[in-house]
Length: 406
Ligand code: ADP
Image (cartoon, rainbow, N blue to C red; front, side, top):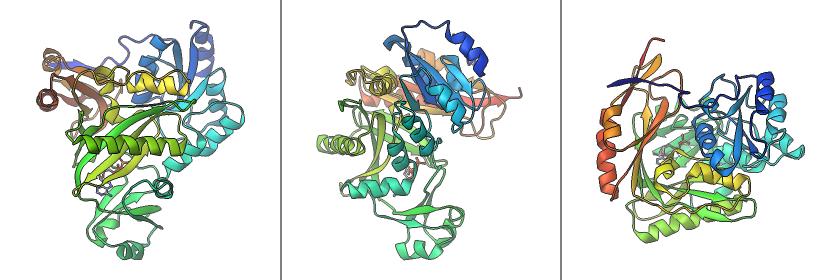
């Protein structure tokens, strides 16, 4: 079955993009709603905006692309993430400003903080996390376990050789979804990365990749979600399948939860954080990286947990009491990526089967598809994690996002 995406089929349309119309539309909103500003209007902001009304919040996003994914459920200011004027407009009347992406500069957030706006994650947290080298230095300074690493300046091939191969070379900034990560077995593998400042890490012999979502509010209350297991698509390093809970011994799960708490407390972070771990062969648990926002590996919480990661993030940043994080049903979740070669207007195949199997299909309202672009995700719950995984794997093969010329 073919089905066109209807990005705004159920969307309230408070405003067309642009400042003037937004101000006019704002008066249509119930005055009692507390407003949250989000830098970025992608799928994470979209899912935050969907979670906002039941807890009395309304959302405004700042995004350069008119009619961005969050726009279906939120007001939008059209502008660059680091446009000082638009950031000031975003913060005006907002209880707090938070992030959908880490592309804004920490200096911009600092300027908002100086003007008296509550910002979560804070400029300090963003500056630590945004730069993978700073993040690793922070983990090391806190005594938190992470793979050995060292800084590599552009074109410094000797530093890679000295560190030793095989290793993993990572761009310090702007890497995401595996872009900016390269396993280096011989020096020629390093070539494509060495034009930017990097860090090099020891190649971990990974048994499993694990992740924990953890929320902390301004009062320091913490809530943790179950440990999940992640599989990656080796072609593009994008998260392939999440299973909740992970199939790991209880002591490994307890160790991940403890480390997640220690990391977020050390950061004094506010909001939800995705903490990614490597369970190394031999049993060591290492922190790979921290995301200061809702995370792909937490999408399953929408259907499977008592409080979704998106509601929890909003609760944390607006200093509400945190919601319960109980896993109601085992779950499996996977991304809907643009098919290889796909371009144009997105078309989804296989929806009828997904409906028949009771899966939740989340589409992000993106107007164009590209190969491996995240177009949505699917979550399946089951009586057991094996049952959820089996259904999810069937659907992963059946669902396909291709494109037609617009
Ligand atoms: P991104 O920020 O783009 O998600 P990551 O640092 O999480 O990048 O790396 C992406 C993937 O690369 C990881 O999920 C893991 O599979 C692999 N990887 C990263 N660092 C290492 C490492 N030190 N050893 C082995 N594999 C690694």
